[in-house]
Figure (cartoon, rainbow, N blue to C red):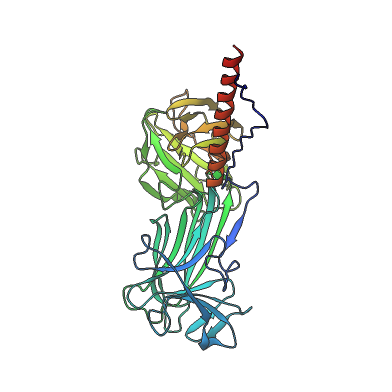
Length: 436
């Protein structure tokens, strides 16, 4: 008689997730994290490119720069010429240093020099996590003869910034807040020869990348770019349905010298509708605004019922908390209707009926899919009058969790677990058939 199959032991199904946003914020500083012995070093890789944003080769050579001894200038380089260049260097001096063709090199920056035939020197950061980052970079000429270079920042090969460094000691800066990255994404900081030869092109670079966990509309406001990161400034004739991006921007003349930056559509002479932001570090009242604080935007509807709209476009699929506060900022008493929409569907509707009293909206653990839109809109209210309808808006969108990347080890555990579960099920069925 056949013996029944027996199941012995315990089946364990283990799923391992990797590259999840850490519980605390982190910051990487390229100069502080520099290594003369390891390349890559943590998330940083030192290299060069013949076509920046497309190809990348890590430097394979390292040696102190002989022209500056006994001060040690550590150099990663590719020996395309006797100089050697291209290179990426770092000074160990605790004070500013001038030597070997370098001028006023400071301890908190790297030095990048392009190659003889257009090669770019590249500092690469590879994202160890999925999440939001703030990116800060400053390029500055450090050649005695006067630097003339082209400088760039790329995310996975797509340009975030292009500029030029002309002369010594004058910085060209780049800042980006709330950039969404996935584990394994790359951000490249590159220095080229400026299309006029590679001599005297030493360029200082200070770069830091900070991991953050939320988008804040006022903090991330841009008077230059629209859209700016996930934020777009616009207006709508049919709130929640139609949307047009503002294309006009200028300081609000009635508040000068305090700068109130305005994106607007010139439907009326005011101009309205508009979306504005104060550059003042303290509360300000001017030009029909009252008690405008630095941590909010100002939205004003148009004369024909047009809504002013702040739009956030989800750069990922995940779960978020959304906080918004609408508050009257017109001296005459604001009377507006305010709304929050997701992909045109209403999440919230309310009214602002006086100055200084907020109307708040909060939703927790809210699911968004990549490219979903969340619109925060301000209309002219039930009175049908757009005069004195300036409405302050504060918005924060915080990541609660993301769909994490699964490691190869995790996938292996899942596969093994499923196989074991399948085997156990087959054994149970065989037992039942024999017992029956």
